[in-house]
Image (tube, rainbow over all chains, first blue to last red):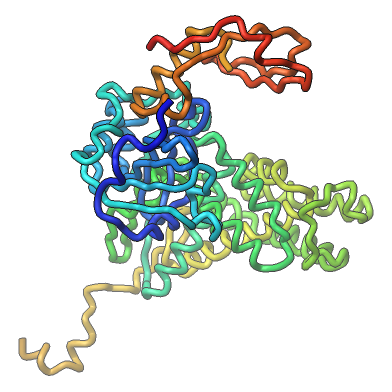
Amino acid sequence: MTTGFAINFPGDRSRVGMVDRHQFICDLCFIDGPLLSLFRDNRTNWFYLWCDTDGIGRDRWLVFQVTRKTFAEYISGKLSLRKAISASKELFCLEGDTNQHLEGESNVGRKGRILSKVSVDLIQAYLPADDSLFDPTYAPDISMAEQLLPTRYSVPIGGDWFVGDLDRFSRAYAGLYGFFYCTKPRLVASIQSKLSRALRAPWEGGFSRVNLFDSLAKTVPSFHDMKIRRIEYASPGQLEIEALDSVGKDIQQCLDGYMTNRAEVDDHAKAINVTLSACRFRRMNLSARSDSTLGISDEQLEVFKNRTYQIANLIGSHQQLATLTSESPNCVVSAKATLALLTHIKRLVEFENAGMLNLTGRGAQAAEYDYRDNWLEEFNPLTEKS
Amino acid sequence: MYVTLEHLLNAARAGLKISPLYLKRLGDHYVQLSLSPDSGRQTQANSKGHFDLHEYQKFDFVTSALEHAKMKL
């Protein structure tokens, strides 16, 4: 076996920091090691295709963007990997040490990585075959039984929106979307392991709560992430979103459940909060403890378990919260995560109550806001003349 | 490890379709081994005939080899 790369490092050097934003999602081809992996940044899908080694510790990967359409065509066997590479807007070659973290999480791992922008002509020796179609049997992380294609669905809005409202709404909605996406079986079968990892954070204060929803939102493959297709701003208006509508329905159902049973849900949440304080668990790291080593009474244990269960039933998210419970190290962490979920739900309910959102059909879409009402004209003489 | 040579060749061909220099990583030769329960613990073979062998310390790869050759792909 000869050593050395098949071709000299091709193309023009680019800033290698670009790939630090990429987050690993899953492997799409694994044969005695990953050959093709799916990554994402905050907007798009990226494929990492292993393409060469020098045989003494350095490897190369082709790194390229994949649109939603191309991803859907590749994963459903309609498009070869070779054509996916040709269809990509930008193509990069990444070289680094074999045992290096491609995700760029470690500073040590950054040493020695190089990245270049290349054209297809320069890397002919690395291109896959014409019949390089997706083979699910070499992709154990992918479950073809689950919904593949995103759909378009509308989120009815109304009332008077400020720019800051868009930010608050999108954070709350995206947080819930990530949570409901990761708590049911999906195309990426290994997705629940990310939930388990987030739940094993210390949960000593606000960071773990925020981290849970942020990390779950980043776990959603870009292919299924929420993309705004259209915004109609009027009263009533709508946001048209391209994502998994089944997740959208789960969000709608839990909002409806909360609004219907608000008093009871708040009562259960209060009982959990009181018990958390009584046990002095609010700022205690319980990530390494099981239920039996929490050192609390059976009654207190029952409060955490039973109240969480009751909340799950009342908001109609029994399956998702059962997943949350099974992935949590103990019932206190699952109770804390459930309270964090309620915080997100309440933020959207505030929009519903203010008539700015109508997901449940009961949020009054306020009619008083008229976007044609240009009252500023009265104060602007130039406008009056025209 | 693979249950049969054909399983190994299928995996190598699948890898080559995706990445034409795949054999630089996998190697281009194979060794056929004779395994028994005394060789070690092995995982269940998957649908592609692949399994992992966690060999016992006394297992000797050299004396267990039945055949060694270059893969004909």
